[in-house]
Image 1 (cartoon, protein in one colour):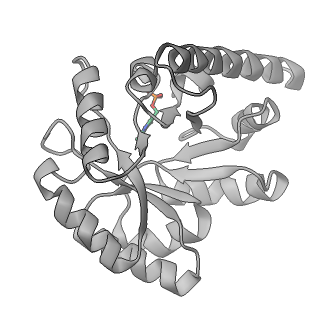
Image 2 (cartoon, protein in one colour):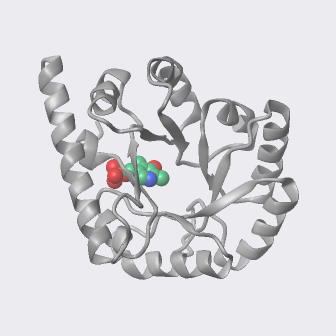
Image 3 (spheres, rainbow, N blue to C red):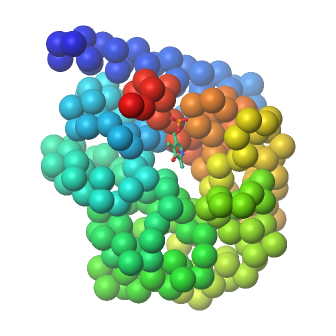
Length: 226
Ligand SMILES: *Cc1c(COP(=O)(O)O)cnc(C)c1O
């Protein structure tokens, strides 16, 4: 593919996803543009990411600190207005590196990580907005704090000085996501949080209808991951 073909393909995918988001915002009676589109570029190389930036995408997501360290410092130098979101699990021993590179953290889900992030933000002077991840389907082996543990974790975040702007979740695979999105929205409301990081390639339209403010989309923008 030539550079101009890559740019045309990226522009087309970005336009299609953006149009679908605008449509759902309108259906829901929401303001046009009230949903942030995060292009999840995990596993994709810088050469595949650049066309999407040139096409106008300004929010990107990665799920591994080390992988992001390999490609984003150079991309951020070229495109300083890009916002980089960490959308995956974060190990406490990587908290400082994550805070140095990313701009928003979506996976705050346990007390040890809250402590590590609080310390990393103090040390670096970078106070990043964060989402608390909720294990909304109460699944084994899934990231996110249990629904029952959410009030205590939010209190700990406040005590540690973390700026929590909303809740994030990945609903169980293979079943209708809407009830889980609705539950996450209800939990956020209950705790006075107005941002919701929910919705991926297969279910973002439903998520926007149910109030998502941040959709995290990989496949629909980049194609299948290898
Ligand atoms: C990979 C990933 C996404 C994007 O998934 P797609 O189905 O490719 O859109 C969104 N959120 C998280 C947490 C991910 O790990």
